[in-house]
Amino acid sequence: MARKPPKSSASNGKQPAAAKPMHKRSRNSTATGADGPSRDTRFKPGQSGNPNGRPRKDRVLQKLIEAELDQEMTVTEGGKTIRLTKREALAKSMVNDALKGDHRARSTLLKQLPPPRHDDTADYAAVPLEQVLQFLMRKGGVGGKGEVGDE
Image 1 (spheres, rainbow, N blue to C red):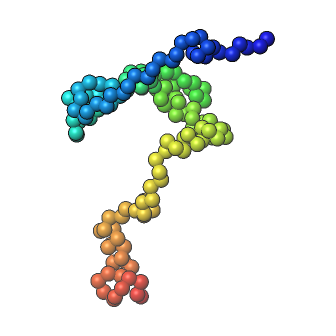
Image 2: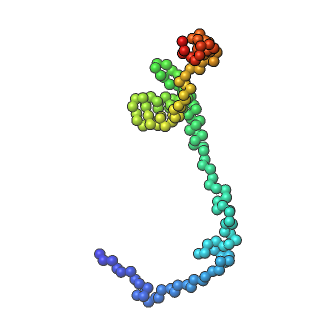
Image 3: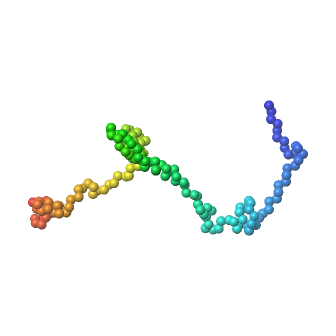
């Protein structure tokens, strides 16, 4: 089945409509159109195009999830029935899955943990100064013969 060629405007005896002449508008024109909005309705320098901004995201779903995670539930663990919040149960489940070898649970868990602290003072026990001085005096390191360790 062959297609018929489209009829051209010359074949139907009509001539195409003449293009309307484009008028060059002055910069002070108040009409809208191809040149954009008129000067009196354009944004002034320093004025935002959206003064009120985008409306804030509705936090209703987040609040609903928070409220649900704070609900308590009963869990049986090791033969004992305990009450936990759903947030605590979720944390327990995530830790248990990570320990069982679930790589995704482990990765998620590690991302949630704070970075390890490198606190040098945690390696040493805090001993009161009086005890240190008493120890040194018993050893003879303070007050007499010289430096600590000289015997």
